[in-house]
Image (tube, rainbow, N blue to C red; front, side):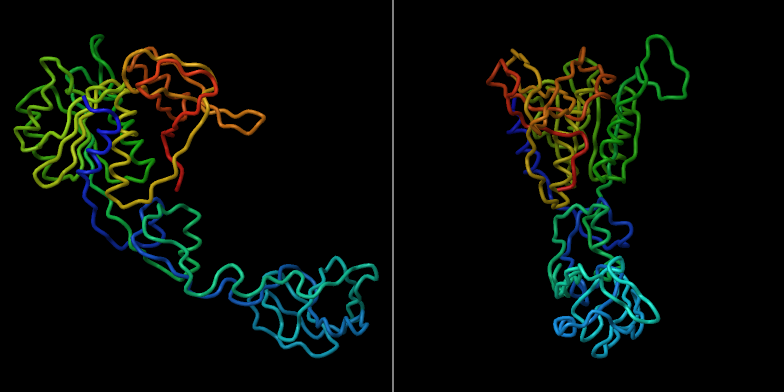
Length: 403
């Protein structure tokens, strides 16, 4: 069996970059950027006033003037006025600073009577106060977003501010999520006592969509060699990524590896020294399709999807990898098998500001209900048995944060 690190490296070595496409800027959130987004203008593009009040010249104030005839009013969006000597302009937040003005006094600190603005006697005026200087955030042409950035909702403001209506992003892969097994019955259909509800497929699709991969479709195929071969051949023709669950263990009805081999999918590895998810299978199709065959147990399927499928898709998109995230175990864990343990956890924090990972027990790798209370899982190395409370561990959230 491969180690988890060897399996991860083997998958990434098989991944080829996807192509680039241009999409409407408003549809780009969650996609991986493939261009540099440059500032259209200085930001702010003018000396921006930060307070409602009056604008005047410091030289007049420095000469002893404390009341100023109001020359005009300038609101945000109005053309920039030119200030007359000895006067002030009533100014609004967001407006450009009038020419010749370099002082702002907030409206709360002035009294306007008969067209004259008088500054409070005890107010300390400072030159350039409440002025957001032109270009102080960034200059025209600055690189604001670079290739590999997974675009977040916050990035939409940047793209819009640069005047872009379209952006170049990585093409979303076409993904088929395939559940195998005679025992599976979809929600809404009549079910017998010896059958179980089909849950892996919807959960895997939801996990992938949570990471921005929207072109997912689901199929359920019974444990029949001919049917598996026909349907998998069709999916290999139509999709660039196949994610199967079930049919990869050592049972007589676990046909998936042999059927995939008959369709020209080359096995890269089968079985990884981990729990859950030891029977994981990975291969590559004749046209470069990535094929992941996950174990059928729900916990195993979800952990393997998050641990291997999601990073592989991110790598194909040329996404910038997020920085590793760590937490400290909130309670001790013992794990005796010489396997890497992926332990589901609930995240909490303490008064010292530490992120703590509270282990959540699952009865078996089929206990998917217990996962609802978890935020992710931590990786416990296979060369260690006892992990005391406070041990720093590598954390994987089910849904990763934007890098």
